[in-house]
Image (cartoon, rainbow, N blue to C red; front, side):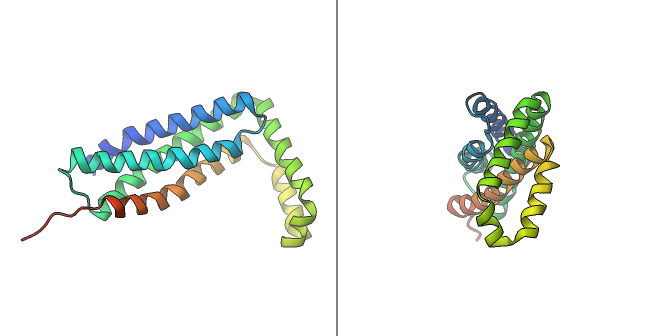
Length: 172
């Protein structure tokens, strides 16, 4: 397991730092950086997972990679990336209440703008529950949501990349 951690850790940390940095830079140019930040996450996450798995295959495992090894490396990478990303975003939002308020205001505006569509699709009760949840939203909620949206595509890309890069040793 140490071999997996040694390989995945630097790429997860690098991806997490890039995610936090992208959120910070986007917050300078956009009052609600959360949506654009998710897009950057969909680029950074598979890139970090690919590099970690490829590096493990080529340099730590003599050019071989089983599906299970690829999935393990990928999981460790995207979990570290998601954790660092969430913690960084939480720290940014805690230190900048005005940014959090801008995000909350932007999300409230989207909710109100789409009120009729939402009520038509999920009903009045769900809409009112969403309003209540939005009022009670905290910086941690925004950060946690971002972390979750690194894990879900991370799983998908780990499967895909592990299958593509898989090369098993021949046994005689």
